[in-house]
Image 1 (spheres, rainbow, N blue to C red):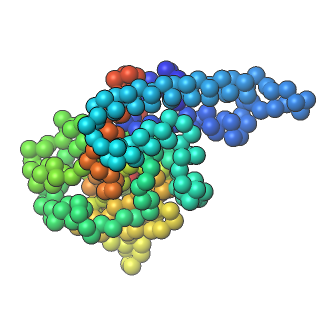
Image 2: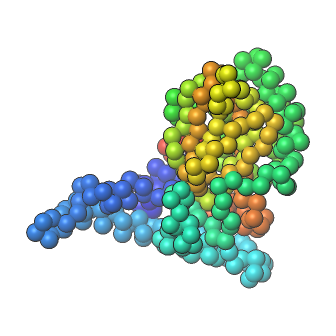
Length: 319
């Protein structure tokens, strides 16, 4: 993924997505492999060459990142930078080998982008403590502001995700969206301003009846997804309500309730009702990261954009 061409295609994402297509070609033998006579086919040689180039650019980037981090955070103590240096080391090489065996072998856990070592990894996090309790207290005011937007038929965008998934973005890739009427939602914006936003997505997200997102993982292990139930229909005649399944465990959204999960665990959604479901989705930094570690991650993301530029390439993200 660190060839110049693939980096330019991926640089619109703030996380470091790997060459999944390349890895799949290697695993499944499409276009390469060893012939029956024992000679390596041209397809396999091409894959090997691409992998070597990917490894070169990956190492080159993380060497640059290491230099930048050591210079910018030179006043930080050795202890404060311990996990930061491990973060750079792990992402410079084979990410999977830098993960604990428990996660590497976990059937539902997969890091398809950046990995930050030393963080707890569990499908669902405790949403009763700080900082999530603050967003729960703000939920009624946020719902009131959303109702105002719905009353004037504010638009949810179809951004090319699976059928039935639409979004009203507030932040996207860390940037405030001019299309969102922030002046009409002071309580929402005030609540978000108190959180450590991860530079990814903050949006009201609508899922139509009878639709869902397929099973997937999101790119980076340092991001947790916080969902606040806004419009959560009840099941007809006692039937099932809209849900998300994380590592095989279902959670049914409820209005005003906050749920936090680790999107590096495989997850999928479905709305079995006849009405739309709306949530507020907030991508946050993992609560176990220090403020310094968050700043380092932001610096490596900034450096990546600076070195490799930006394109219009889009990667659809899950809930």
